[in-house]
Length: 227
Image 1 (tube, one colour):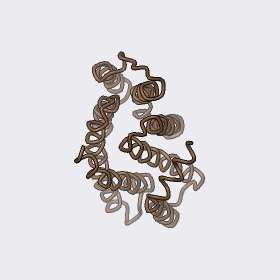
Image 2: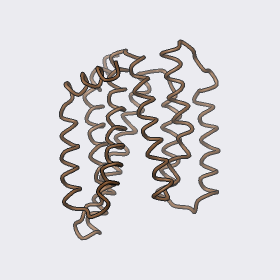
Image 3: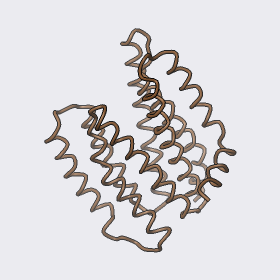
Image 4: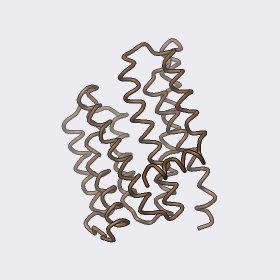
């Protein structure tokens, strides 16, 4: 069923894959680094964004059981990336928030597939956990404005992601992806202008892939406006 749904999504949204090809070509010719690591991280990032879109596609079609499976898949993919960033790139700010991302994913899986509502997993509980995580983040790592903004943003995302109200979850997700797409574009352009015209691969792929998610959300928007 997992593969079948992915094939159906890929057939209806084949343009998403063009961004993968475009980004891969640009990165290959403009960035000299460990190609294996680039491809590994890019593939994980691509799968994460793809699973987000397939989850949203199934949620809007009321295929909640399938949507929750992809919800969990994108969370686990991001967790793998977070572990890699922490171990090899010294980026620890991502792994802390996997706690609340996993809570939201478990909430969706149990609610839609097991008909069990874990009431302890709610917005209030997640918010309390996020406050603790923000404190830990600021305590354990030196202050960095961009990372702190990310920390607060992750907290907001996971607080609404735990919701089982599909319409609310979609509009909050649309707001989230618009914010990160705009922000990643500005960061990518700034790095390009200050790096002698050389694209920084990690910021470039992030912008291109999140842009594909934003485009997909806009595609779904008319359906949610009618609900």
